[in-house]
Image (cartoon, rainbow, N blue to C red):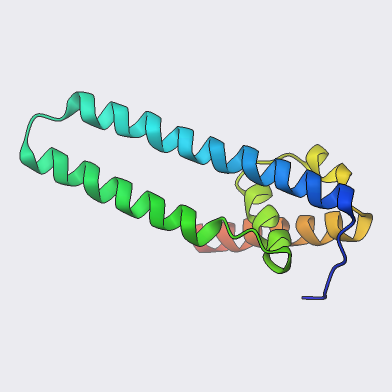
Length: 116
């Protein structure tokens, strides 16, 4: 992938989008953990909650890497997952927005092929 230069405005917007989606992911984990905890009645249920939290937090740590060399890939993944919108990409240069869309389209088509 080609090297991208980030303007100060793009950096601020990238950080804002990154933080927003990261918080959204944490909120989903908290919500699901609450649901699991309310339904827990056994030691096994507690271990399942532990496993869920461990796996979820590992996935967040893997996915949310705020290096400018990785942020376009992340935003492509988030766009493919519907966690950010096309409109949010308007704050980036045309080239960066296009790269993000291309990654999202590739990921969507790869997922569809995998489901076929």
